[in-house]
Image 1: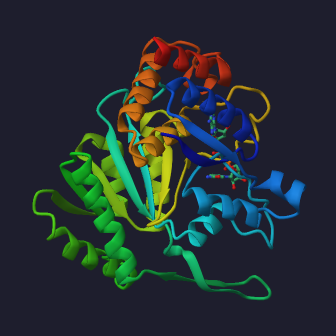
Image 2: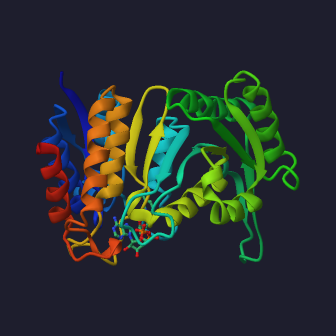
Length: 337
Ligand code: NAD
């Protein structure tokens, strides 16, 4: 069986980590066919726009995309391409797993295994009604949460928990202060949780969640939360397990799914061949699971863990002196063995 996926090489370290990732996916023998499409600065240079229609068409056709980070130019007139993609395909669930790995620079080389399920289309990032005073002395931004949007993300989190054999879902909110928006999310979550009596559900205020994650991360299993809180909490989780180079993100909608690394295009190390390819590789593992190749996903994760355990060709962010491609080859060699 072959599956065609849209491949977006992206900006900065994007092409380097994509080369490394495709090298490992080929070694895995997953039978993937790659259809390349442009987005980001490369697309701006080549086609005069950051997100060409041809790229949207490719993703619509294949339903699955593997995407490297994209640089969004700073300044007026450029809205984030990632946000545009999420809106265009209604990719409402952002799934960001953070699990301990051996030989990282983290305090927690074991014991952390948290999946953050972040609402990806509403909340503070919907920015509807945004207004700024002409002299810049004030700004207003509207946070918009809907009952439908809240229910579907919480249901997604509980279904994921069931599928993955997880025991607990923690609903993270700020309903004590943000009574209307976060309150709506919490009420919707309580109603949905009643449909899943087999899974423990608890509630936690976001500030306490940050403290608890740092003090006792082992108490968390699946976290479900709104857009802004999920963005911040998942980076906190990345910090717990050794940095952004180890966290993937799946953007899932009813029809289309886009898999990526959580980190950005890292312009400070671009072109040096030292970026850690693991986050995008782990995004590849999420993608394989999504398209029904859970066994290949497990093999890929096991090869990454074995390479970390052997401290074989680790990149500088992990304390080694290896290159992006050298690390990928070390992982691929464990797949062939
Ligand atoms: P960043 O994630 O690119 O970099 C933050 C720090 O982490 C840097 O020091 C970088 O060197 C390091 N880092 C990131 N990925 C790494 C890797 N794989 N291996 C080793 N070190 C790594 O964040 P930033 O500098 O704030 O953003 C740069 C650009 O990326 C911006 O234009 C931003 O808009 C974009 N961005 C894109 C995405 C995406 O496409 N999903 C996500 C975040 C940021």
